[in-house]
Image (cartoon, rainbow, N blue to C red):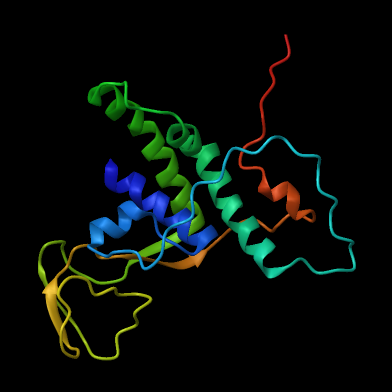
Length: 190
């Protein structure tokens, strides 16, 4: 469970801030070169931002953020992932947390299956020997531990990695600000 939460934290921290959480760096045995930014304080509701004029193309960063928010919104709709991650689970017994995770896991897995075609970066089982050839792509394979010499490297596969072969997200809305809503508030009328 901790690995799953850490994976999501790494994904969104790297996507939005281009940094990894300190917990992830500790797991990898890496000391950060500089202090990580403090978490942002909760923001008060702000007035709606004006949308870009129709004759101006959206900024590339806004499009990337909108795509990330689309995926996060999908994981929230299908598996209530954000609700789960934002709630403190410290006071619940492990059995209760485990039971609650099953529908979250099922919904998020189905959402990812419909949106991304994922494949392992390296074939093989975790904790098995693996060889990394010279000319490997460092964006796809990260060498950790006591690295000395030149490739090919022989080591132990700690995680096979994931790469998306295809991404199928719905088209972005005209107003990118609408895409920043992960999940709309729900109001039931009596």
